[in-house]
Image (cartoon, rainbow, N blue to C red; front, side):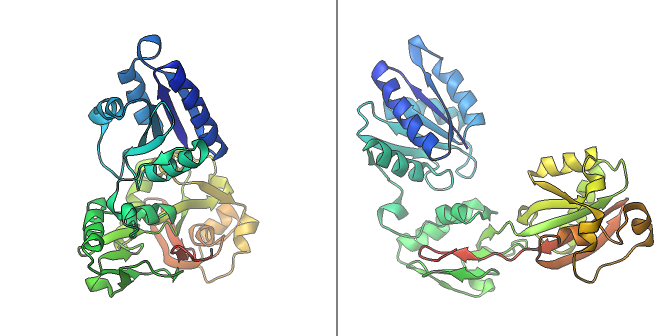
Length: 336
């Protein structure tokens, strides 16, 4: 995680350097610049930081920060966290992406580290209510339709119950105002499947994609095979968290490009490791002659455990399968 900090005076730079130390201790990679007449142009710094960082910290007037980031704002699900610290270090103010971007959490972190007061203005936080987008981020869930977040928060703020339906087990005390509900009438739906209905769709990254392919297979063929697989089983692409194959495919350019395009880690196993995976698999004599094991995609998908969700699908020289890993979600107070 990268954070960019900017200040405009000597006093501000001293505080920015203290803030950098707090963030780096928490695992952030930081860079601090001086802006204005004696430093980098503010517009230039903001454009670069907005595209490269997950958090921007302005040390100075809140109005300066607001005007600087305004041309770059896109959507709460995409924008980085933006915070402002006054030069005296008395207040830490989240301005943009308080929940999904984590600006509120960073304000609390900097507040503790600098002795500043976090100024949290989001309504759910101010009233101690369940912030579904903050919780989803903390649990590693993708948000399929972020425009629905305000509907969930609005119900909670109005004192109306929010129904939640989950395909995954949930542990810990349920938040105030949130209660179990059937899929057809819930307001929050947690599933790896594609969303049908009007609920806020939260997607657990719980699927492993096993892949086999002919040598030299290009990325377009892999993309088409993946799209067919996800459509056939009505699954959300965001539910895939990893791709896996045999080590013979570890340097396939098309396969590597395919995984990079989706942001997945790509792991490989030897033929011996795949042969040791237990289960009933779709055998192929041709695959056995070429690789030394009777099936690549199903065995690779299951190499780290789980259950086979989508068996081998073949076409255009590509085979794919999906396994679901066991995942448990935790409300505050649950124990991982």
